[in-house]
Length: 109
Image 1: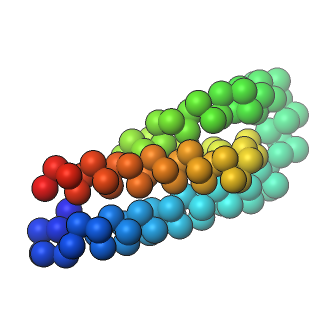
Image 2 (image 1 turned 90 degrees about the vertical axis):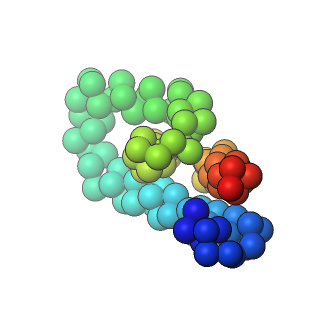
Image 3 (image 1 turned 180 degrees about the vertical axis):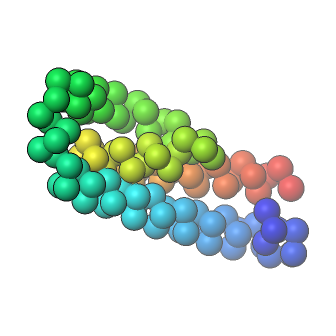
């Protein structure tokens, strides 16, 4: 929004904001993968942890539909790595929603 307010072209603002945000969700995904590797024994040892892991696999892609939201979006991208969602589908779903969010914001100004 600040870039648009300072006369940056809407297309440039959209491209730069989207690229930065997609890189951020990719970092979150890989942090989630690392987190799983460090905690998998403890996570899968408990029945609640195993149940949560199964729910993550079952509803993970659906939950990514909310990843564009400001407060809960980043934790959802981290959880996507923890439950090991397919990386390509993760980037396609979460990344396209982030681009769409910035596109709508550029239209508002």
